[in-house]
Length: 94
Length: 94
Image (cartoon, rainbow over all chains, first blue to last red; front, side, top):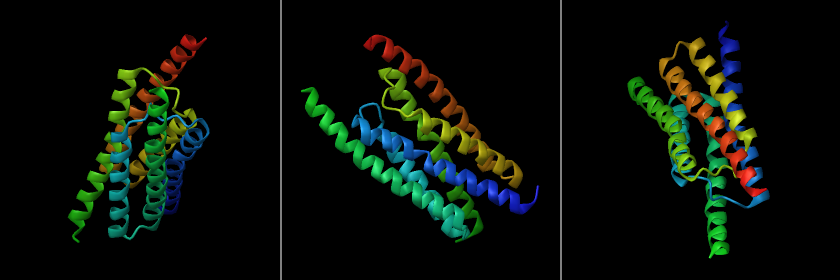
């Protein structure tokens, strides 16, 4: 396998894992229900993706920086919405 | 920054993103409620993590292979449990 093919596979892998959050975000915005999500999972993910971005910067690897920056932004939006909807869900329950 | 430090950051980043699924899995097993999760998200994630593993094999990069194999297994368990609990949740609703 050539180095070029390997890079392409890496870029596709990065894009697919990054965009995987999009359908979950859409579902969350549509249903406005967030009680099944774990805060701990989202915070660990944010921390991990942030570290990957640092790794990408140190390695000067643009695909790693770009896909992880994008993931970080998506996960941050997800966290904010989960906080918001969890609060609303709780208020409606009581 | 030395190459060694960069590698350490990469390994920590891989471990953190891999284990981020564990608190979500624990919450799912405890609460047995899965209706907020998007199948499309889990399937994209499985596909992406699978591609990262192929990338790691091609690059002969053990940390990438190990963390993504681990993620793949966790996500597969997560998918199976989400299918199971979504079915049970639906049956209880009707």
